[in-house]
Length: 268
Ligand code: KIV
Image (cartoon, rainbow, N blue to C red; front, top):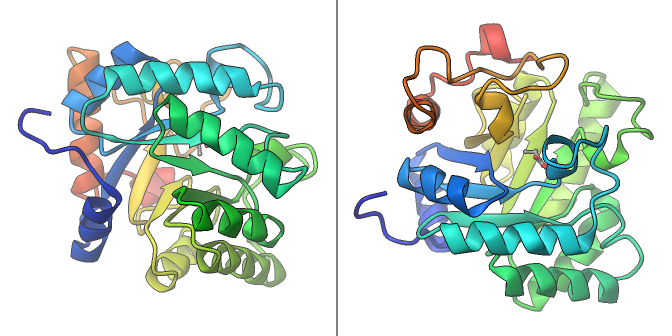
């Protein structure tokens, strides 16, 4: 991205304080890291969605730690200025704080700037343990793909009054434990707006409406390569774009200008 300086946590906090939307994308390799960074994407998320879109599995559950380290290192080699978040895969932080630290260190040493853990109150002590040891953490609440079977499939979370209250409790626990960012997946846009306005850290939405502090999409979804049913929150940015770089540029521009998502079409 031309003359853009390397994004730091302070810079991202400043964006948030100014009300500038954050454009995030999943990314799994060096070539796309270079392209997305050049197109002005703020955050490259090495998502464990790679288990589905790269490895061809039905869920993210089978992703190995070694695989996340491999892809994080590739993204870090291609990237120059964007902020890199690496997902901690299923089972890599569930046993103990020591296990979580060991695996988070591997991702940081591969080039991540921040690690992401799925879950609410139960994972807050682990987040605090990592934060106290100098590791920046992103939380992930709402629909959490690693719990897909326990949640009964791909369902919107926080629809009932009890569900919404639980979601707010979980998000607050994660923020109070020291998480500096939160991914909010598949929740009603009114609840996402309330959380974003009150939680005090940037909320990156996916299927959570336009009021979030930023948006993330799975890279292949925005390139029109969704396998199977296209989720309602996805927009194919390749339509009318002459190249992948142009599509990504449009995504960044639309997120920054609040044109994506359009709550009438892409929200809940
Ligand atoms: O793994 C992933 O792709 C995610 C999404 C929320 C972007 O976590």
